[in-house]
Image (tube, rainbow, N blue to C red; front, side, top):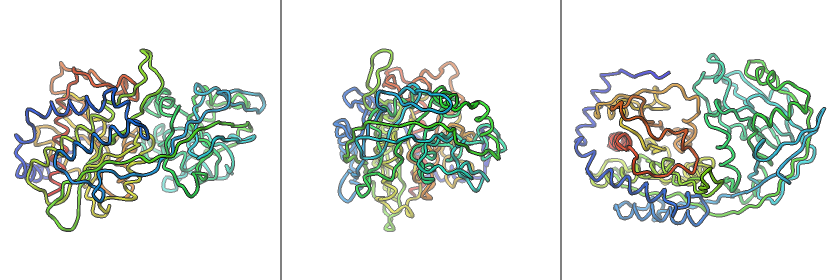
Length: 519
């Protein structure tokens, strides 16, 4: 449920500060929409091939962004360079003969990618797990602060863990944070914890409602070029041998082979006191793999502030998308990523241009375009480990994530707010536009953890996520481009009939927040 913050005294105080810094007339010019559309159109064009990292399309993308920043008059962010390189490994892996078999009380055969989609992050040409045992570990969570440990009393070393997506609060509002998903609900956490527990592999049990996306997202994102940060010292041998998603009917095959009731097991796993158990099902997991270790790069430009203590505000927008992959029903293979995230890049570029034209701020503004967000937030993870501005001097991260197309709404939704030091700035900036803020306490889809700002949050840097509101100014203009229609599909392409009135309003809202923080 969304709750509206009505702290009017704070709003008035902050609104005065915002309006004193920048007249509202300067926040929007006639050229804004033209620039925004042009940047999206270019970055989401077929010529950019879906902006997959470690391809020729990466070079085209990052060079284009650097050129835009240079033409605006920004400084390179990384010791005189626009680029921050780091190593990724791209692995394409699949089971031998596109299947793997298991045996318990009965035999079962799981087909790839209909029953399961699997991969590895290791630098190897084959994975050969012999007679690996499958263990059902409920949600695969060890959370002492919530009194929950799915790994209590069970040894998963060398075994393949099956872990449900999301966390117990999704099903019981009295557990964890209710529908407000914690990081324990994210699929990446399931892999991290299984690795800490010594498992050989982890398959996350998919559910469309609990994951907030369909099976096609799991398949499209992992058939080819699975990316991970690369450690040359270990060649990633300390990573899980097998990572993957397990379809519900694939899981049912495993439980049937075990002679167990899957529905009963899942129901019990949702309740406190659940005890993980072995399915007493084993099977060989053999995968052939090809891998490529290559540099990718974050892009960054700086507007230097007048202060000498080096504090800065980071404004981020990831440049990558899914590249060229599985064709859709129309035969389109290019995942153009117009909304996700050409719209975010265009919003950040527009903000950079407008900030450059305004008086110099006290704090610096760093415009960061991370790589490989779609594959696991790796670019922002690397940046936070090697920041251009010390994180203790980074005031906030303002993230542009899929901000368009959006119709103009009376409200603005903020995830991660309600208790954030950024709340008052967003509330004041929205009020200056004649709009209001809803702080969304239903993070059931885990969206707050699914973009680059979260790596900053983990390091103690304040960040929230802005989403378009629910109440259009013009009720006769319904959203023509709802997220479920385009998310991670080839149809996420720029269209001339995009309504960007809300997009521009949201860009200017973030600009006002950045300006307040920078001064």
